[in-house]
Length: 615
Image (cartoon, rainbow, N blue to C red; front, side):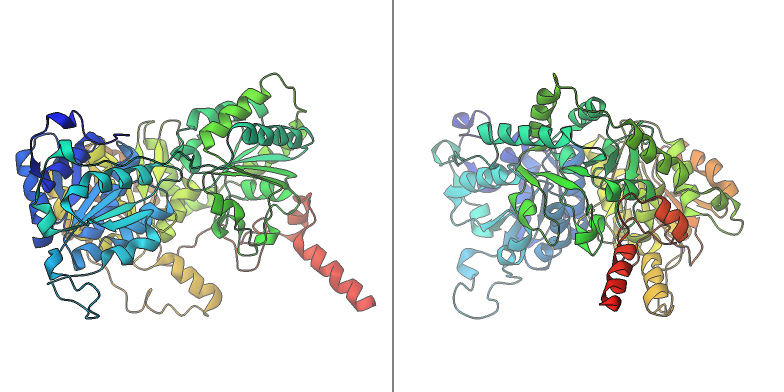
């Protein structure tokens, strides 16, 4: 099976470096993100001979990998980052991990010292200058990583890596290129390709899948308090239309993971919000009181379930659909009644068909109860608008979401700014809102915004960052200025690591070691001016809307510094040891118990203690 070059038999002998660019172009990649160096120089030089593919110079390889990851999300569904050997290659690691945990297909191509300079099995640490075993380093966070073993195998390795990156649960791959192979000549018509295996990446197909669809329908028939959990796997499967079709068929309450957050618009009549440790009370009450949970494309990690996994959806029959068999088998205290290893789109298509001529019982009372929680517990509370001295981040994010149109792309960073965004942003149909949710490194959103903008033809991107996170990759201001990209950078500046400060307040007696004490940040307004980038600042709630409008009217890149209270809290959040329905600040016990249909954990515990005392 040829998955690489067009009209390959017509191509004359060429260098491996030229072949690589021809292959990448055939995959729909128009831009490669890189920082050059001696060991990758031959491949970079090949760009001088092409017009259909170009490179974007970055100031750091970590940023290059993050740009490629976002480019893949927003562009052709595949992307490439390149780096030289040694430190260039190792600097890619954090961005590769972002793609690994969020299942984004990218290929990283690294230069390597000549094969005759490599240490082999000699036992020494290094022979060639900057020789580093990048393949072994990245194997745990890639689907495939290999060093090219001879020039004639370049087609095989590229096709194999691309197939693996895109098949099943997608992810990153890496190909390491010794310098002497980069400049070697090959005849593309004479080199062997890769033949994908016949076996399918999913275990549940055909008759087995149909049987499990029938089981799913049977479980739904008896459901009185069902909930549908919409995960990021639905986006990866391009099943955004199918999930809305299913929702309209079943009319069950909808909740999302953060990765699935932008799949359901905030104004959808069935939507309760995102669940989890920093989730919305309505979504958490719904899943914790449910009797059936249909989880599609979500790996149900502990940021969703809480640390005590056995307390999650504890009275529900959990039906879990995932493209990764290992995610279905991990357990940890949560045992689904039915697991389905399938592509989300295939599953949804089959379930929609199976339900077409069936009339399932309605759950109107349950739906009304769930929607009452959404109305009763908004994350953006009226009292937040009364803040005078600083900008309240919930108010800022809420107003920003009101001002952005349906085509906006919003990329947020990590920690406090990520949490405030996910708790307060009201997604409109057609918007994209994402972060590197699984790896969640500081410094992601800025380079990712550059990558997304380039993928979309220099489209405006909304970058939401924190003062700490922005400093990790602020060197990419030179990339932003150089390519004149209309990225709007909103820095929620609390002059410290807010999410860690809150942790220290809860568990470390308020000692702000390395978060307030010892921490510093620059004047972002002066920094922007140094790069000739337009700057704005917001110092109070009453300035928010006016300044946002000015930022959005500006045609080029912008830095907007937003003054946040240094000890601003994340509200609500789960405290350690609690089940996710019992978020902090804690509700009165009377109110809390009034929201619980399933027995609260603390009541069960108290009852057990009383029985033990009697005995």
